[in-house]
Image (cartoon, rainbow, N blue to C red; front, side):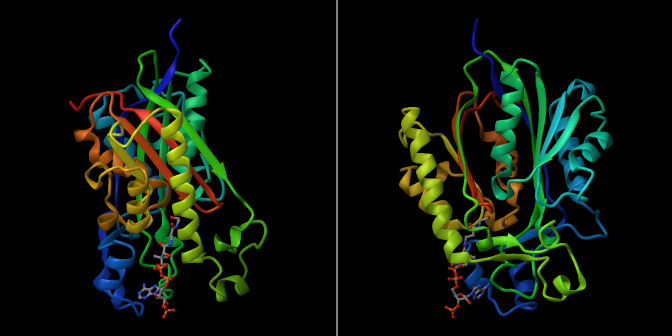
Length: 333
Ligand code: UT7
C-alpha cells in the first residue's frame, strides 16, 4: 500500500487595509525611513484598525473566505482546525473555534497553538500527524498575528518591525509523491527574556503596575535574537537539505520567516540559493509572526508548480525554530 502523505491543496490569506509607513513611524519615534529599510528591509506594514475589525479571528475569517473562493470545498468536510497565533482574540476560548464557527466549519474540532513566529511550521507538523495517522483526511491550518497590539509605539527598537496579517492552508491526505516530505523542529526555553512579553500571562498577571511599566508589550534583545535566528535557521536548513539530498540547484523556493531582510539573505546565501528563489515580502507587510510563511505562499501561489521543492524555515520567541521540506501539490488553475 502506498504511503499516506499530507499535502497542501489550497491557500488563503488576508492583510488589513491600513498601511503604516516608515514616514508615519518617523513622527512617533526617533527613527528614519533609511534606517528601517537598511537594517530591517521594511517600507510599510499593515495594521488592523478598530474601524476595520477586531481580533485575529477577523483576519482569519477573511483568509478562510479567500480560500473558499479559490478552492471549492464543503465546510462540513473539514475535520480539524489548528490555529497558530500568539495574539488570540481572548485568553480563552481559542480563536480556531471562533473562526470555524463563522466560516461554517462546524464539524471540526478546533484549537490554537502558540509557537510565536514558528507557529505555522509547528501547526503544519501537528496537522500532518493527524492526517498520516489515517484518522483524518482534511485539516485546516491557520496562522497569523496582530502584532500591532504588542508593539510599543514609544520604542524604536521594536515598533518598526511588526505588522498584522493571516494566512491559511488546507491540508489533505494523498498517496502521490507530493506534500510534506520532512521536517526538523527545535525549541530552547533557556533564555526567554531575550524575546518576550513580560506581563499578562500566569507568571506576571496584568496589573496597574505592569501596564504603567509597559510590560504588556514585546521586549526584544535585537542583536542576540538576530544571531540565534541566523545560526539556527541555517543549521536546520542545511540539515534538512543534506538528509534529503537537496543541493541549492534542487530547491525551487525558500520561504523564510520575514523578520529581517539581512537574516533572509544570510540563510539563502548559506544554502547557495539565489535571491529570485526566495519569497520576500517583508518590505510590504513587515513581521506578522506566525502569518509570514502562509502569507508568502498565498502571494506566490500562482507561480508554484506541482512537484516544486520548497523549504519553509522560521525562528521566533521561545526560542522556537525549524525547517519543513515539502513538494508542492498542484499547478495554478
Ligand atoms: O521574528 C522573531 C525573531 N526576531 C528577529 O529575528 C529579529 C532579529 N533582530 C533584528 O532584526 C535586529 O537586531 C533589529 C532590527 C531588531 C535591530 O537591528 P540592529 O542592526 O541589530 O540594531 P541594534 O539593536 O544593534 O542597534 C544599532 C543602533 C543603536 O544605536 P547605538 O546604540 O549604536 O547608538 C540603536 O539604538 O541602532 C539604533 N536603533 C535605531 N535607530 C533608528 C535601533 N532601532 C532604531 C530605529 N531607528 N528604529
